[in-house]
Image (cartoon, rainbow, N blue to C red; front, side, top):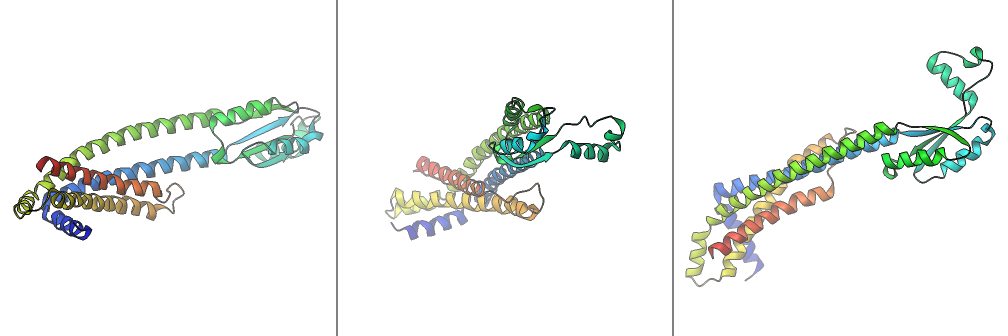
Length: 280
């Protein structure tokens, strides 16, 4: 039995499935679309996390009288893992920044400038997390040249906790929806495969084997899945491509596209194959 025969008869069997086959294909397209939607949502959360992390910084304030060590401290802290950028602020620069932000000249109000020199550390978003930043702040605070450390760790921790909960809920909801869709799709594929029973009986009457029946009908289910997967990828993936100019939308991930094509194809093939075994 040649591969060309299986593919040709599988194509004919899919076309012969009619409305049942189209309904199964639409159900498989929905499965594919949910996979792409969940992946796109996860990408958006990751983008938001990276943008938030990229804007976070740790500012380490030097001990009084240690301003002369500013360059040495900045070099030492800049060599820490994950640090992508450092900025040093002298006492004079700190007073100028204060005057710009608050409209008050400290040197004119007080006998001396009370603001300390500091080093600002900015981290690579891909190499940092809320827990890691908190650990960094504790370790930097232990430096003998550092008096205090400032960073918005609580806000970052809350964001990571919230994003994790949202992804978990979305994942559970998506898994339930996909599971229900798969179960319904398997039933639809079985109904579609049932339309080929008369053709199968005709093949058996002329001396055909189970393999000559099983192969084409399984291929018909595979084609339903592939076409359904392509529809889901085209609709949701196409929308992602069109919206990718937005800073919050990423282009479709290759692994999501492959999963959105492979899972419907697998469901279609298994549904048709089970129907063939049950009917044969």
